[in-house]
Length: 388
Ligand code: AOS
Ligand code: ZN
Ligand code: ZN
Image 1 (cartoon, rainbow, N blue to C red):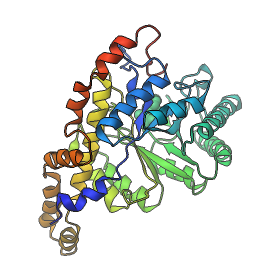
Image 2: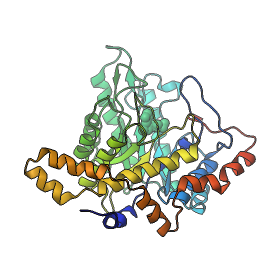
Image 3: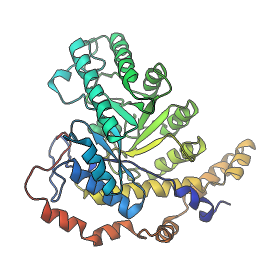
Image 4: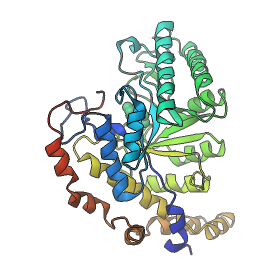
C-alpha cells in the first residue's frame, strides 16, 4: 500500500506554468465577455498569475504570447515577475492573426509568408534571451479547407525547411516545441495534425526539438495517455498544454470534463519518468476562461492537476506489476481504480498548511481582497483579450 505520507515528498516538485492569455478576456466567435479588473497589459497579467502561485505554491512561471504580450522592455517584465515571486516561461509564437498568413505560415506555398513567419520566430528567440525562457512553442494554424486546394506534400517539405531554419537559431539551452492539432481553423487538412507528424518533424531537427501535447487537440475517443506513453518512450514529450474538452478545442478547465482522463494521463507521465526529479517535461495550462472568474479558474485548474498527480502517485506499483504479469485483468484494473477513487483532498489541505500555504486556496484568494482591489484600481485603458 502506498500512503499519502509516501508520496508527499514528490508533490513538492510539482510546477505548472500558467498561460498569460488565461487572465485576459476570451470568448467564442459569438461574444467576448468582459470581466471587471481584467489586466490591461502583460505586467498586470503577470501580477494576476502570481496570485495563483501565492495561494497554491504550484505555479511558479508564466508563459507569454508574442505579440499579445509585447512590451518595450522584457528585462523590466522579467524583474516585475521576479518581484512577484514568479518567472517568465515559454514563449508562444503567433502566425495565425496576420493577413499575410491567410494561406499559411511556416508551411505556406508563398515564400514571402514563410519568410515572414520565420522572421517572427527569430523575433521570439530574441525575446527568449531577454526573458530567460527555455522553450519556444510553435502552434500553427496552417492547413487547407478543400481537397486539392494546395499540395500537402510540398507544404510538409516547406515546413521541415522552415523549422530547420528556426532550430538553427535557438540557443544551446533552448528548445523548439512543436504543438499539433487535428483541425481548426483549417477544416480539410492541417499541416501538423497529429503527434506522429509533430514527432517526424522534430525528430528530423535534433535533440532540442520536442513535441507539445495539448489535451484538447485530439479526435473524440483518442487514447491520449497512449500518446503520452509513446512520446515519453521516444524521449520527445516536451510539454503539455492542459485543458479539457467536451467537443473540440474547448479550452475548459483541466480535469473539468473528464477527471478520469487526467488521472490516466498522469499515470503514464509518472510511469514514463515525466514526473521524475529534474524532468524536462513542462506542464502548462492552455485555457480560456470565457464566463468564469479568471484567477479562481486558474487556481481550480492547478489544484485539479495536483489532485490527479497525487492519485496517480498513490498507485501500488509492485502490486500492479504483479497483477499485470499474472494476467489478472480485473485485479490490475482494480489497483488502478483504487488509486483513482482515493479522495486526497483532506490530505492535500493538511499538506498545504504544513508548508505555510492556505488549506483552501480558493477561499484564501476570495478572502484576500485582491479581486476587489483590481476591480477598483484597473479603470481606464483597454482590457487584454485573446488576440489583443
Ligand atoms: C491553439 O489551438 C493552441 O492550443 C495554441 O497553444 C495556442 O497558441 C494557444 O491557444 C494560444 O493562442
Ligand atoms: Zn495549446
Ligand atoms: Zn488549442
